[in-house]
Length: 164
Image (cartoon, rainbow, N blue to C red):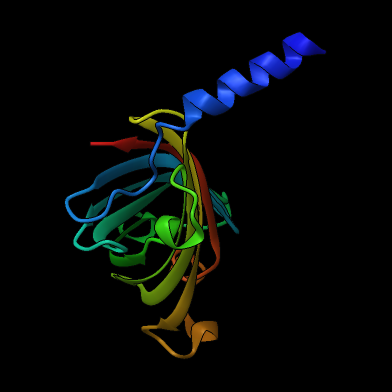
C-alpha cells in the first residue's frame, strides 16, 4: 500500500510541471481521430495564444473512412476552419487541464466546439473535442446531398496535443 501511495505521489509531482495553456504566445498543435455519422477521419488543429485566456487558430479535417453508400469526393471529405478559443485553465485553477469552448468559421458552416487538453509533460498531452454546427450555409439541410451533410453534423475528436 505504501508503494502504491509513493507511486501516486511521484506521478502527481511529475504532472505538476505540465501547463496546458500559458497565455499570450503559447502555441499548440493537435492531431487525432474524428468520429461522426457516415465517416471517420483525421483532425489537426493549431492554436496561438493572443491573450491570457484567448487563442486563435485553424483546424482541418479529412474523412478517410466514409460510408460506402456515399459518393464523397475530396471536397466532400475535407473541411478547414478558422477558430477562436476561450482557454479556461487559469480560470478553473488547474494548470495541467485546459477546457476551451470556442467558435469556428469553416468552409461548410459557422459552428462551435468544446474541448479539453491534459498535459502529462511540458510538451505532450491528450485532447478531446466536440464540434457542432450552429448555422449551416444552406438552411434547408434536408435538401443537401448526403455527401454535403458530412461536414454539417456533430463531430467527436480525440488525440495527442503538443506544445510548440
